[in-house]
Length: 112
Image 1 (cartoon, rainbow, N blue to C red):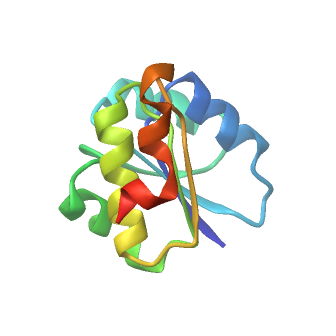
Image 2: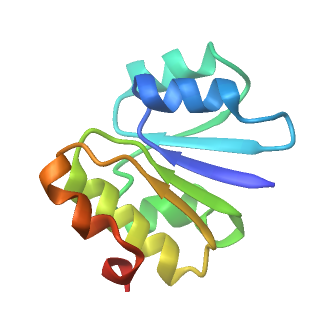
């Protein structure tokens, strides 16, 4: 199974560590330094770029992904990544809400 993790910070590294070996993981982040750090956790594919960009996500394998995890520090980017994943008919979409006041925006109805 294939998962895309948007963001390569601490939460993403923890998720990469915890996801089972059945999962082939691609991590998307604009920071080459953070991508290098996540690669020390376990073998993952990395893609440098903005995870809220459809072009970047498609290049990272959006069309063949089974799951997308938006784990960046920016709610706008996380929400857009979720919207793009829903548009690609990905059934497993998980997101981290950075600002608790924006939690309502993460409800599935907001992605479409």
